[in-house]
Length: 596
Image (cartoon, rainbow, N blue to C red; front, side, top):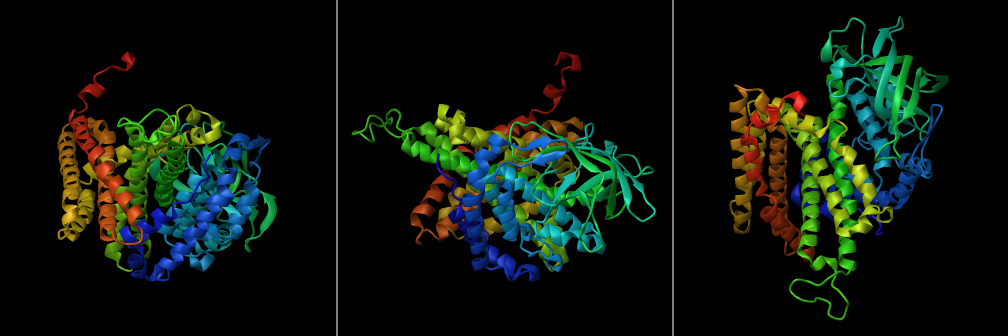
């Protein structure tokens, strides 16, 4: 089985040639010191950690899994040592607030590091991203006292973080949660209730776990408007950020036995009058938690893209080495008994589809992460507001479309290996199992599609889509004088026309029949995802053509060929997606419940 190799060349090309990250970072006071040399050094070091520290314990971690014994969760062999090295390397505080010991790096950089970590070891990566999301939320919404008490230790990796949303009866519909927070005389709260599916809710990697918990006060308004956010530590902490030695009233009741990500404990957490502290304003907890959710949803797309990349590396190496059958045009290795799998058009279809979607997905993730950075660091308020709006449109698509294509890629890579892909030796069956969850957690993909179609498109009356169109218009204008790009731009124009037609159709249809929104939502998400992937490929092609005479001629020529495959073989699907949307809701809603 080939060892995982971090995609350093791809990352460098996308950051520097496609997105010109240096220009963006140098234009914002908070990132002006984030130079090309610095990002390259950090990415290369993160790649070494992914390759040398995380990948070697990936399969063994899956086979050993986390173990639960009377409230205690033990991680697989090697995880504690790997986490200690990760924390001591300063990676936990990479994007953290400088005031409290973080390094203040942009999300664009950490997103690429996350993708490599997920590719090498998805279970391990989950421990780290939950802490990053928790610190981000606390940084944005916590009081100065809470930030001073908790952030430094979390940035050091000495303490980790979680988010506790879901309950046995309340998943997507969080307005139904029953966890209660009762005010105490000292300003703290006593929380009681049960949360499920809590990633890294209990483990042996850190001395404390800081839970961010959604709960309601006894007199809170009904539904989501009554939800507040609380910080609940596993171990109580004094005013000097030292552990008191007293265990808080929160325990792990069990861990789930799962299809994948087995080395990441998915916990049932029981809160029994646990001491908690309000984060932000009362009854505004759901809004505060979405600070974390936007980042975590971006991470899910990165998880699937990373797993697709590691699966592709195995499948491509196998296809070049494994000999089976002869090429349709005649023997390519007449001296051998057969030709490599790579001579067969259908094997190439699988590999090119994977490669094309990995590059587009990575590019879309960078594009979305840059908007998050603009919304955080840009000195101009109007630019921050615009970026926030773009983020609200991009994140549901990036989360859903990247995870769908990432899972597909893992299955396709498995298919390249045939029976060898189905057995554990090659690791691809683990990739399939690990990638599947990315389509489900942090908001199932159907919910992301409904959010995109309903709130972000119909209710916004296309306003957010207009902002994306401005981005595309600016790019097309920049390519007006490049003859080699003109034939490629036709594909983008096609995607945009079809997306516009679909948007107008649903907005018009929903005015008289609200079921049209849900009926169109998934196909519309896929249509927008395919359009965004096409936009990303236009940018990649433009950069590759502009630099084609350089030292990386073979690499750039390969990029152009993958891009041409994508435009020729993937873009035409926009027409079938439009037909699906225009079919309307009638056939979906025709059957009575008892006919299912």
